[in-house]
Image (tube, rainbow, N blue to C red; front, side, top):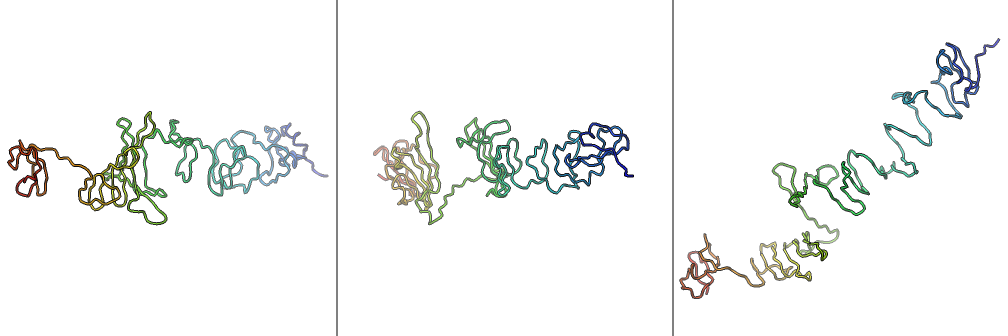
Length: 335
């Protein structure tokens, strides 16, 4: 005679509480997605599955739901499932481990491209580590103050900028830029004790050489008022000279002074050319009359004596004043 267990559908099993040690066989376990055999403990509704660790579930026509919230695990840290094939996963806490493949948002857009490692999404919160690549959009501080206006390409509300040495930065020094709003000063400092900061202007040319008269770096001065923006002066450096100029109204820059690489100094004249002397003045020079002999004179000095209080040539006021030349011993009248 065959031994038969209590049996019924999974729905019927869920409506009873098997007695302690009572076995219940589920006739539709395949479609119900449950174990075929359950054992009762007199308390648990429907009983507990027997041998569930070795079961294979196929054709499940319902939900797989734990009996209590946020308590049961699917696998362990040492006994893992090999693969999971699902359409959607909703995680309310953390994803720990490695995510292989693309990550899409709710609209089906790829926000993480596994092939390139790029993220295309709005990130809320902090980003720890380095950001290598382009940041498209605006950047805000911890207090929600906008620091970078991505729409208008503006940087504002930044009091300190630190340029730190490190990999992929192209820097081997640490610099700090501070904006003093009280004095309207931009301060550039070196983070190393007793080290002076440096600012370099670099012009690059892929093909050919940079000419002696080509500007390598330039500081331009501009005013903005009710008349608009007006450019009126500059400091420019070429491979052979540095010159300071004020715009004459037609951007001709005919009024300037320059230092040439040979040590010569010129006032006005032809801008690209080397001065004809150590001091080359294209115009009139003025020397104010002196009432006393210059202190510590050296050979070659020229001064204008007032002819009255200081009269080194004893001209008695004729002419008054007059130029004098120091010959190494005394002041000699030049006129």
